[in-house]
Length: 386
Image (tube, rainbow, N blue to C red; front, side):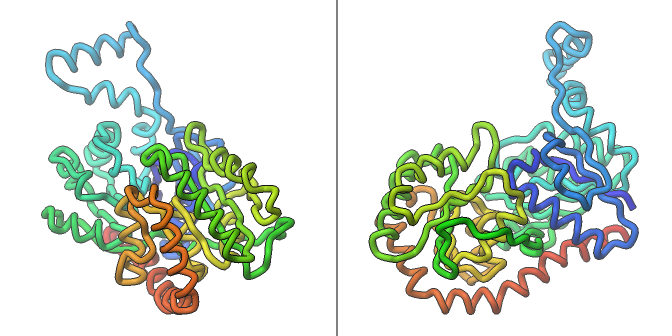
């Protein structure tokens, strides 16, 4: 059985790495003899994932202006409104791998949260034309993200695995019958514990992750996070560990966090974790924190899965849905609009501190069930194969 993962942008986003790592391990544990291949937009970043059977280059190929494909594409688009030929050329590195596979897994968890995706639609269509099984793996989609065209694409899938109930319920309400509920595979990902950096306080270090993505959507959010750091330094004796989780060009947590580090480094209580760690190494640090405050979903999953009380700087359905499935409510998740209000951040932080033991107990009770839901995705995959 050969499975191809695609719609993966590369492991410089440690959340994407976490999905590939954990999914590959789950599949190989439960599907005897399964071979897992990754088609990546940035394959050089994925070499650290040793469970994969092979990694292929899936980067887009622009159509050169005035070339033969360019003229054909222009003609088809102008006179027939047909973009299929052009998209086939742009994504041919992925499409050419379909033939040798049995199942194709679209693994970008929130790819469908960012407008129309004609490239993915075309690839999905080609998968079905070749008679292969097509699976949307551990996804989150908001109702505001659904369009008529996207809904038609979602109907092509043999199986859609929604990683939280908000997405699952919405897709069912839209009339889809190919949807099953699971949990994000990264809840099951192992961790690697490196030596603690200088200044780390055992059982008394608070992790903070912040992202340029959030800052771009809410320009005032950085000032609110700065005020929260000041408040933590003033009212506690904790160390703060600034924790990057996405290290991409034009989307680099480390740059934003370094600016905060420079501002507070003289306090002696703010440290900055390295930018070259992989997903299991970041999880190893996050697992040893007392509290975690994070914007990146898979950084918060690393915390939740190790029973670390967590406050989420949420900006999409996935953050809200995951928290709801764990706590029965969207607990300690701030909406994007709220992130510019330092008082709300501080109030949520105080709530987390005051309920520390209660939150840890809920996590210890419920996370094992969430991990079982991660494994359920592979069980549903097995049923599809039958």
